Length: 509
Image 1: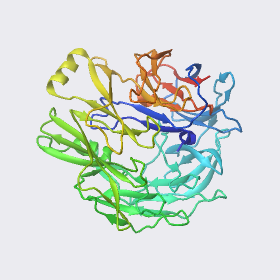
Image 2 (image 1 turned 45 degrees about the horizontal axis):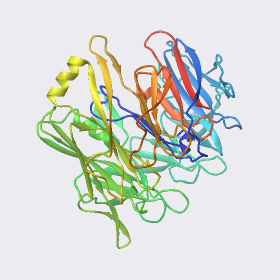
Image 3 (image 1 turned 90 degrees about the vertical axis):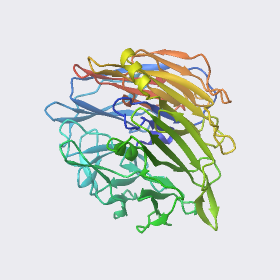
Image 4 (image 1 turned 45 degrees about the vertical axis):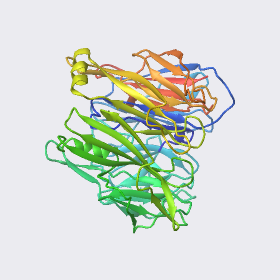
């Protein structure tokens, strides 16, 4: 995983059954405190990347400076792949060079910490490689077995496979396989342990041509055994399978099975969304586990669940329930009844946990869409869908039933052309004062920044306006601290279906 996220708490994309129709959010939160500074100004750099079929862009601190370089992978329509480094200098980013050719067997790429510094890793079906972005050379790090198929001719996606799963400060290989997760922990000398296999078979769905499609199960990383170490948990058949972490940073392969005390149908929003596409929604109730995390700051893992009650496609009631973790006879259990329930009409998308006021309690941002028949017909007439951004602050371990703050954004579409516009929404520290701000895209050429107040009002009423051309898809916007000044920067990919592509960067001054 990109260790720019050590300074940036990121959350992006709403995941739902209507994901392809209403892609919602890129939500990022910055936790790094820095001296007070209330000015929000950016230096803009535009990088023309040419008429390529597809591009992947990663940010990494490759040099011994506080300026992140860009690693640009371009895939031509012929399938030829090149990698080039675009260095950041005091005056901005330079134009990319022709690049070095990459092998065509790579199926994914990631960036993370290797031997104490940022590194680029490439993955084939059978091996993980250290990838030199300056030469394109591959150095094998470990043999792996992954459920990801053969290389895609016109794409090389960024997949989070290199992450610190045992919290020892070194990134590990976490590889989804056909039998579960294969983990290779990184050692101090840069070598990796023999694989640890955590059995958690993936979710299987048949595609339109009856070809099986494999989805890794959602894994949850938190202390479930009350020993101060993060464990790995997955939900299988309404039971939590907990793989405890042991003294050497490895994990037991035989799980502890934990009964949550409630009926859970799905382990994660993605699993719920996939299943809802095929289920009978005339009269159904489905529950999915969303988070296993210490939300109230008491040192015990809590459980967050989403319930979707359906009386038809256009009649849905969704709610989130918080079950508090409690210690009983030295073991973790959960309250039998939720301590907080948040409800709304229509459909609530994936919840994002952020600490808006730095009180060590997890506040929530929930996006919701009313999908009643009247709303759907109105959207077809106007070509716009209203999306509510609902903010909930945790107080004394509880959320209020109604949001503390509500903001509305609009997604627009054109049925004739098939064009969709989804505004980006970011929560991040834009001015470096240690308090989260709200960044909302307004049309194609404006970014509004509502400064965080640090109190119950959450954000200022009037924004700072930044004039910048932004993509119409929030998944093309990445937030990170590119110059390590404690202020969020933006990296935006403009990828029209025809014509040249470009990258626009906003780097804080």
